[in-house]
Image (cartoon, rainbow over all chains, first blue to last red; front, side):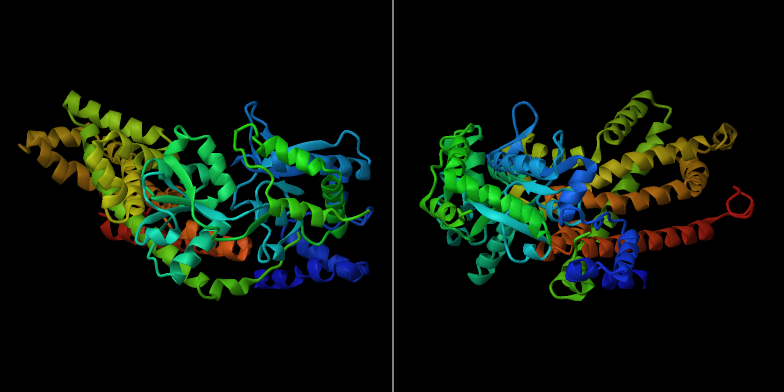
Length: 314
Length: 240
């Protein structure tokens, strides 16, 4: 009973954001948010609730991954580093200027494939700098900044396994990380082509790779760029191959809270400036060509075009 | 909170089916693991009170080992490390040959872990009975195994029903760790639903309600067991 009521009321913040100024509605919203112990919707100083809460706390909470090489991972000194984080740093500098808090503290929050969306939706993190595919279902809960990388699902297999495409794997075991777009892509292809794959769900990428290395799975499916990253860190990289066509289209984006176009605009402005000036390409080269883990993936034509298209004029 | 609520997904196909399949595996794994745990726990618990020092030592090592390693680590050891250290053919069978490797690994891991806890309950149950009973039983000519069978264990099991209930509940909750080795039980399926729909809060609310229902039913059953098996006057149970 209570849950049903609060669910109805709680549609208010999203659908009525703009007419919320009347006292009555803001009271209802306050009640609803109190019931659900959320902490958004305060005085609208900057016209952005995210900026407001960053200003109020003096802290920006940045979500990062722990093994998304080289996008967002734990570096040798124990702090998160990577391509996505470098891009985020540029955005955070701009946020610092906008909220006029010079000693803005950056608080890193580790997230996983399962936790990133709920933590963004409930306001724990203000910015997610990882390797998150921008898709339309997810956009019902979060917003994305410009596309910063383009990849798709591929398979990592043992070099001597004789697997070239997913169709060669009928009846075999394939590992996928829980809660990823790769899981869906593999399930879809398996059903469409009636391959009868045994889909083994693993907790994260390192466990997926372990399943492949120990022979528990015949293949590990994830974004091809991540597979190259994992392979580059394997004990004997030459024993493994990344094979097959792209089973899905995965454009990555930095994730921001939904329904805050002011905040999103700051992020997209920074990214457009970087792409226009060529700094985005420099940051890309720093991490990918050849990059600290020797991943060696020069800027692809597709991504280069994406950068050009998204370099919107001032 | 910027969130679009939609409780409807919980009764939509295929999500409803996923949640029920998760519930099914949670119950199957927990009950299978409980059978192992109860068997091991009874044997090891009795061994812990044995007069033979070697038997006692082995039982103590078992309990300390399984009780003191975090369950999550044990899951990982059974699943990823064990197949690598055993002979290759057996390892290959563990990885590929046996049916439902994730499920049986989880059952075995939960069973051996909870078994150590049950053993401690059994031991303390036996030790709580005064030495006089043991001595009297031996004096009337019962052999040591008969002393356990007819005198000590019938009382000890009745005494430890409440703490055993906690361990039985614990096994249902701990079964959720099976998801780290790819067992698609209730929590894993809930995550799956939340990942496909991004309605995490609704999915986890449903899982919470289901876990609470399971534990509530288990508690009720154990209360009935406790009442049915009570021997008036033997030990003070209910009617204080």
